Length: 333
Ligand code: NDP
Image 1 (cartoon, rainbow, N blue to C red):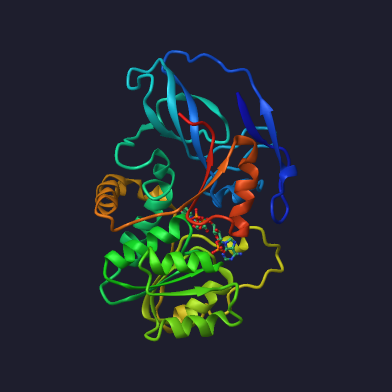
Image 2 (cartoon, rainbow, N blue to C red):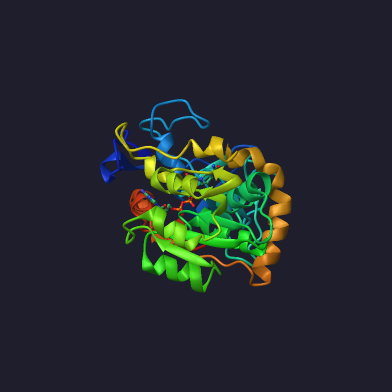
């Protein structure tokens, strides 16, 4: 079975040299185990922080060991009574084409009405992140203005659409014309900013949010967070979900200048980690499946083919090469 190992710890933007493709003999499942052929694997920005050797809310990846992450696979052989051959499952042993799994973190998925890989995006961890951040921290009310950064990404695109369904005015930022067009035409966002062609992000944001910002869903940090703080209304809620602009940055990267606004405007800033909100999963799955069935939520995906190209897919996240969920396709069925 092939798998991708972490060969060295990246400094700055990761490169292909930090990864290695290895082959390992495929073992037969023991009692209580299942053997799965992976069809899809996810690459996610948080994996960058697991490549640093420091304790955080998740443990660091070890050098010379296979990486891990969300994946969808088909059961080839089962010695666990809860699964039978042919079941589609979602699990956490990505970055390899076959996986030997104990039942604990393995979940059966239903791909009747949505493609299986949706469970790595809109109906999976990124979708739940958007849903939980809005439900638990932002608490959107009709008529409020929400700003979402990395808005055409996996989390951002879902956050935009849920906020729209909750009656907000939605402003999104993204790094290409194709992305901003999709946000306007398909995702129903009210105003967009292409931050790469804007000289003055704060001025562009002020123009897009004439009544200020009530909610900021932060996926980027840095200049985006700073601009949002300057334009925040009194009592604004900031969902601090991710700060991708800083994941590859050194200590000399410019920081946030407008943080004092949190004091002056009584802004509630709150960080979130999706795993604290797994209790929302049943409610999220019910509501999101309904929105998808009604055509009220849509999504995009960027697919890279082949396990050997998984490192490139991951590095592409930091270059904005994905629109919507970045996925790696490993096998056809
Ligand atoms: P995306 O699908 O949004 O992919 C990353 C996108 O970020 C890229 O496509 C790119 O789009 C944008 N980007 C990359 N570098 C920069 C930069 N320097 N400045 C501005 N934008 C940049 O990833 P996800 O939806 O999976 O994740 C989005 C954020 O949410 C990340 O910060 C992630 O860490 C966080 N997250 C947090 C979770 C939690 O539990 N707190 C759970 C899941 C995700 P563009 O072309 O627009 O630049």
